[in-house]
Image 1: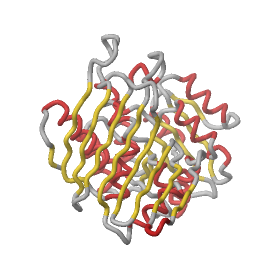
Image 2: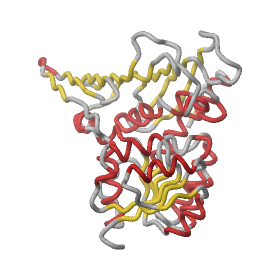
Image 3: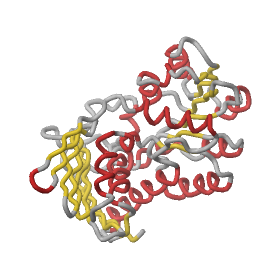
Length: 333
């Protein structure tokens, strides 16, 4: 490999724009080789964002074979995952994939098997793991027993069904809000409290008038039983226009931690009145991108905190919640 990592992108939408804006376009050891999107204009817009570097494609296989990237970013909606990963795995190329890694467990398991078979370097876009606030809480949890947690994503839903919101409100394309959006908090719960043993979920529907293509839940409440005995519930809503936001509160035997906002500012309360406040970071994509690029250059993990195996487990929890919403039963993992 040369001094620069040649990158190819499969999917070139808004999430790619955010990665570029928050630092990736300014990495001195990165070369932008190829941009692929079903909409050539979208791919061309990302190319212009980096000064016109790289070739534009509408076919992923053609891009991989023409530009021969050192690493690939797979940035697709949940329903589109699977074929792109298989193309990349077949060529033994390290890849970064945005969350969630799939809309169904079968696709995620199939990709995970390919990753393991060829021992491929992977990273999943669970950027919250890289925040200083999260790392400090995880460090403190290392000496305590986790007890309870609750949190999630609350909002009023899209005002217009355009762009990503056109497919986001369709259950067969997004998998629902819990799978597509609250996946960040699912992953954070696993990262801090450990693996999940069982899932029970209650859906909420019929809160607002919706168009016929709106097939996701208005809201949901998901109960988690962790393998270490702790318990948690995670909520999602796209029907509550007041008092929403992103949050996670957790209790351990000698600690309470309250994360608030997309940036995950935390207030940590410890015995004897000790309090620790850590502001969250807005510009967080650069940290996970830096870890991925450094790892590709080294040919080994150099700071990646979420691999495809983590993405698989988050998908497993979300798919179990969707199944529980349909059946009314507890789903064992």
